[in-house]
Image (cartoon, rainbow, N blue to C red; front, side):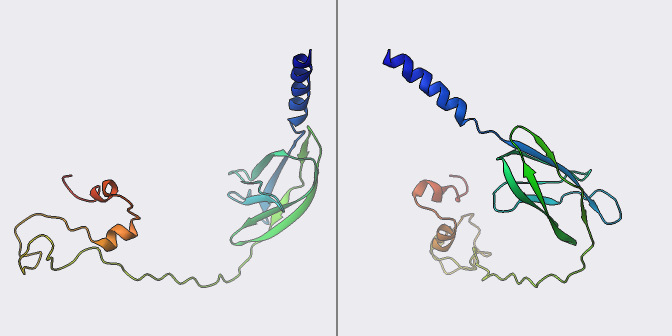
Length: 166
């Protein structure tokens, strides 16, 4: 008897665990009336988001009921926010979002590197002779400890994957 009550209780709990969610649909256009594609659409304060398709349409599924702010943003266009209310098991049609051109200067990005070298001009490890690598007729590979460290090698098996012919 207890077994049957446990099964019924589990079934009722699982039915309740299927959250009542809604969907938000809408479109995004530019100020000249053309569809704005590849616009990032997100719900403020959540991890839900999507991208508008080539027709400017977007759809956010499985949104819990409540009031949300939709954020639409794309580089070169102004960011817009609109408020919507999502109801359980309903599709909310959001108002059309119109994005205006934004000619704002982007911040400078500096990319730098220390230029780690993986090749050496001279090798004492294999040739055992004071020859430049270009002068030595042998074919060999030198895998330096710097290369192993950069690649995150932790055992000999992954170290040997760098060696030719092994």
